[in-house]
Image (cartoon, rainbow, N blue to C red):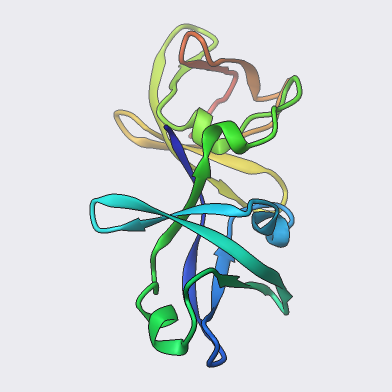
Length: 164
């Protein structure tokens, strides 16, 4: 089963076992739509159930089954939160999960290989591909203008991007 990381536990909240969550979902509280989380503990994944949760200011807080006090919650600090890939909703045409783009080969329209997508980052205006090749390139993820095609089956993103 493939896991997709959606966030991490960043702190404790109160004394009854609640945790603060940094969520990578849009909106932030979208992570709470998944009742079954996998937590990265050591070299493996541990299944947990979300009992309750809500947005709290700029973060999200959650209560996990069998985590009953602050000490138990503190043991989960900095643990990644993932869900099974098959639990994610299907994407629409032209939509992609970042995790599906990471590792794809990036090819310029003239055929030059620019490297592979290391990761993506949100900048506010648009998402940006961080491409590791002979040098690191930051390429705006703007479909139709900069991003010509994303072919998941071939593992390739075609771009029209000129850099300095």
